[in-house]
Image 1 (cartoon, rainbow, N blue to C red):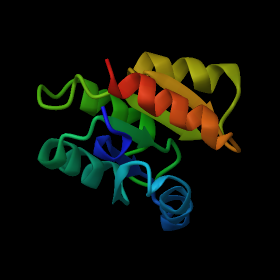
Image 2: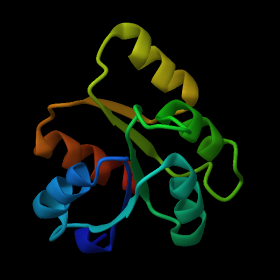
Image 3: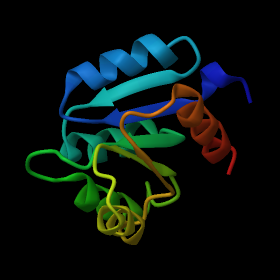
Image 4: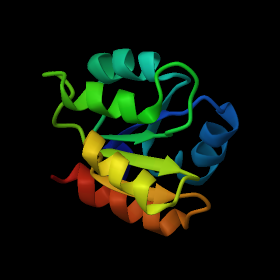
Amino acid sequence: MKLKNIRVLLVDDEIFNFEMLDIALGSKYNLSYASSGQQGLSLSIEQSPQVILLDICMPGLDGYDTCRLLKNTPETKEIPIILLTGLDNEEEVNEGFMAGCDAYITKPFEMTELMTKIEHLSEL
């Protein structure tokens, strides 16, 4: 699969994080952005991304609840989810996997690690 054809949705309340990823990955992937968990759910159904990058710490619907909802919605349950977060203790990591994430990457992260996860998960 050509990389530019991989559709990636970033769900994060900080637009700065999308802008940073867009600069680093925008030429490689087809990126889109949702600023809240609720918007992420809607866009996931509309756009059918191949991978979702999801922040945990967001107001309202946090990343854990968004992940659970995505994994329990027929249209989105098969989409791989990578949690991208600054939370790195064992309890938080376990909570992420219990919520249904496919990968857990802590900030700051290496862009090559993220790209490897995106490409691997988009092929599943």
